[in-house]
Length: 324
Length: 308
Image 1 (tube, each protein chain N blue to C red):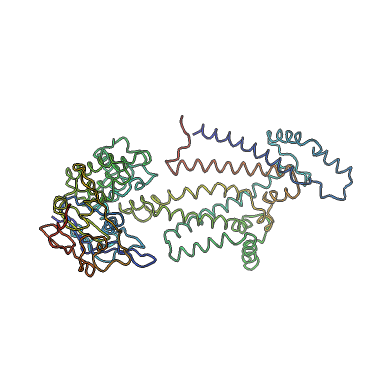
Image 2 (tube, helix red, strand yellow):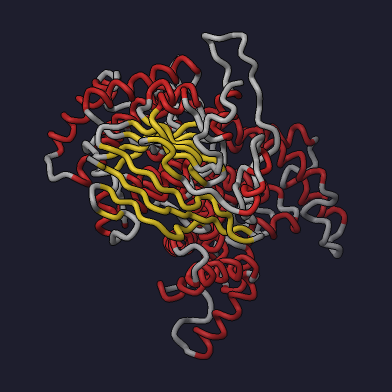
């Protein structure tokens, strides 16, 4: 069953030089109980996609077009009061940098209880009880209910943020770079916790990250973004074994492999195009090793090259120069 | 907590001692003495006057005598108004200045914060621009100009309120307003920028994502965080306002203590200079202590009593 269906989403940011096309024509869908990785380098539009779905884009940004159906309701055209009811109840966030995402002057318990009481018609005692259960579930002793955010370490705050995201049993959770800023060990613990919860509770999660090995180790499917567009979308095994898009190839080649220490790590030369005046053709044209004449003229659409494997490249069949 | 307050009071007394000493030294470094201006007075009379106030003794003796006096809260006689003591000047003038000051402070805080909140919430809207124009006018128009405009309009043209002097509550309205406008503008600007900063913070975005809206968002998630810088400036502002303003008390003919701060220095009225300085410092230190105690309630990250 499809839980989220995003169609032709475009979000632009106003700048002094014109509008930057931060997200352009992004479409994807995800099934209930699925973990979808959204990956790409900084500034490629991952977080903008997430904020657009939640409709948290504020001036100077604006959602230009598109639809985002969550369980049949279009979040992008929902009325404001309808949206406020949906937020957190149906779609919640494990925020980027949980360090600052918790209000410093209220106890963590209070903040989780607040999110329950806003959306559900339950007594405060019930909300407190559920909050304690949630805290235990993410590995925090319930006697820390009355502690303030500054009394927790970064990893613990991230666990609190996860408990808060789970508080209303949402249909969809967006984890936006949730492990950025934590040390690698804590990162691994947090990701393992998210994966465990996803399995146990059957959660649908969009995992936004720039960490390719981490995403491929936990996600069912992966969407790779470049300069505001999704360039490849497939299940994890297909991405790893039959990677098609030259940019995805570049990413894979730029990642060291522990099991194969002889692998040469190659970076992708060049830099991301100017999103205020994006190229008319493929946005990866300037950096692409496999570019053709057509790539300069036309922008490739995301098309299904194999069952359930989408790629936005004019190269037929993909796999053109996979890990040579 | 009580231990903390006691510790703070001890440091405050130490600070006051240093302030008194510094003021004593600086004051005696100013050329001339209280009787320099009285040219027609014969030499012998001047000598007697100096002897009467103890000014003929070595400075160090004067200093110890003075310090001994303030230990018993005796600030000595006022030299210019030879029948009154400094204690009497402060006790009669301060209540007047304080009444005026409290009213002005209430006006400044209530309206300043309201303007700031409105401006921040309607950021870049016309309400924001109007609020900030009022704030900039309030900061840039000198209080003597404002006082004269207020008197001319409300007292002379409209005859709603008395022109000057001290008496009924009606007498306090115009000077309170004139005194309030500067701090009001300052508080408005500070509140606005502080709220704007909190608005862009991650935890406010989390709150919005959680579906928190309206007054709950503003008061619970934004305002309490934004208040800390505003509370910080309230200490010095309160101390300044409560001890009166030379300009406003002169214009409205109000018998407060504001004028002594300025006049005592040009008169070289040594006991009054020291008395008013110590008094002002004591009030300032008291308010800063109150503000520090308030932090503890506003922000759980600030713990006052550090246990060892």
